[in-house]
Length: 285
Length: 351
Image (cartoon, rainbow over all chains, first blue to last red; front, side):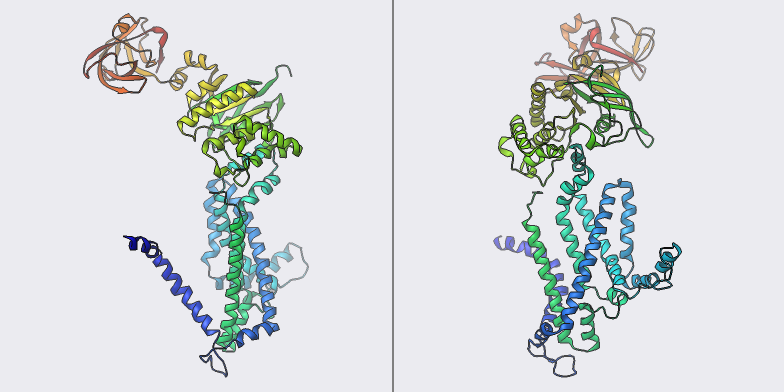
C-alpha cells in the first residue's frame, strides 16, 4: 500500500514525463555533450572533451554582437506583441459574448498558415512594388515607391506577427479570470476609466503580462526563418550564427555551444520570471 | 426642489433587442426610504437597478438623483454606490484599501480617509480585518466589506443588487438583520433588488413588485401582503392554494367537467375563475363548519414542516394544500374532509 501511494504520482506523470524526457531532455543532453567535442579538422566533430568552443565565444566579437542584435530584436518585438495582444484581448473580453467566436477565429488564422507561407506573404507586402508601398503611395502619404523588405523593421514586424496569436490567447485567459463587475464597482466608486485601468486592471493582469512577454521573448529569440528571410543580410542573430556553423562551416561542436548559450539564457530568464511571479502576493487563494 | 426625493424614475424604459426589460417604470423614493424591487428573474428589477447606477443606457424616460437629471451620466459621475451580488471586492487590495477606494476617488484627504475607514469597519463589525485580503474572508464578511465600501462614501442612494442571494440561509438572515439595523441607525436611502419575498417584507419601507418590466404594485409590505393589487402579486408575495374552476349557473366544475362540491358565500358570475386562498387561511373540522366558504375534499397526504403540517387534499381534479399548526386533525389518506375559509382570505380572478 505504502509503495503504491508513493508510486502513484510518478505513474500518473509518466506519460507526460516520458515525452518531455525523450523529445526535449535527451536532445538537449546530446547537444550539451556535442558542445564539448573536438573539431581538429574539417570533419563534423571528433569525440573528446574541450572547453575551447565556449572560451572562443566569449572572445568572439561577432558572437557578442549577435547576442545583442538578437536580444534587442526579441525585446522590441515582444514589447510590441504584448502591447497589441493586451489591447486585442481587452477588446475581446469587454465586447459582448456573441462577438467572441469571430475574434477568436481571427486570432487563430495566422496559426493555420506555416511560417514559410507567412514569409512568402511578407515578400508580397514589403518590396518596392508590394502592397505596402502601393498603399502608401496611393494614399499620398509618400511620393515615391518604397521597399521595406530586407530591413530590420520587416524582421521586427514578421516576429510580432509570429508571436501575437499566442500572446493574445494567454492574455485573454488572464482577462477571463477577472470578474467584470470589478470594473463596474470601480466606476461606481467614482473612478474614471483610466484610473480603473491603472488601479484595477493593470495590477490584476500584471502576472499575465509577464508570462505573455516571456513566451513572446522565447518565441522570437529562438526563431530563425523569419528574421533571416525578412531582415537585411547583416542581421546576424544567434539563430543565424548557429545555422552558419551547422550547415555552412560544418562545425557541429561550435553550433552546439552557441545553442547551449541560447538555451541557458532562456532557461535563466524563465527562472527569473518565475521568481518575480512567486514574490507577488497570492490573492487568488 | 419642491419635494426633495432622493431618487425619481419617470417613465423609464430599457430594451434589449426586441425584449422590453424595463417598461415605463415610474418610482419616487424619499430620503431615508428603503425600497425593494421584488420580482421573479426576468422581471426587470436588476435592469432597473443597473439603469439607476448608470451601467445600462436609458431608452426612454428620466432618472433624477437629488432632483438632478442623471439620465446619461456615466456611473463615475453619479452619486450612487452599488453592493454587487458577487461583492466585487478588489482581490489585490486589502479590506481597508477596498473601503478607502471610493473616498480616494472622491479626493477625500488621507487623514480623513483613515478615520472614516476605521469608523465604518466598526459599524459593520469587522474592526480586526483591515489588513486582510478578500480571499481570506468568509462569504458573509466579504458582503459586509462590500456594504462598508459603498456606505462609506455616503452616496445619495445605495443600490443593493441581490447581495444576499449567494449566501447560505443562516448567514442571509443574519446579514438581512444587519442591513436593517444599519438602515435604522444611519438612515441611508436604499434600493434593494431581490426575488425573495421574505427578504423584501422584512427589510423594506416599501415593496415594488415587478413583473415583465413593469411595477405591478408598490406599497408597504403589509399592504402588499394583505391587499395585493392583482393575481400576480398575490401569488408571488406568498404561497397560495389555487382552485381553477368553471362556474355555470351557480355550480362549480373542474377542468374535466365534473361538478365540484364547492359552496361560496358570495356566488361568482358564470365563467372561468381561479380562486386563491393562503394555505394558512384554509381551515379543517369545526372551524371549517363556521367558515363562509366550504369545499368537501379527500385527504391525500401530509408533509411535516416543523412549525406546521401541510395537508394535501383533492376534490375531483383540484389539488390544494392546507397548513395547520400542531397535529390536528389526525386523518388518514382517503378520508373525506370539510375545508373552509372566509371571504376576506379569498381572491377570485377571472382566467
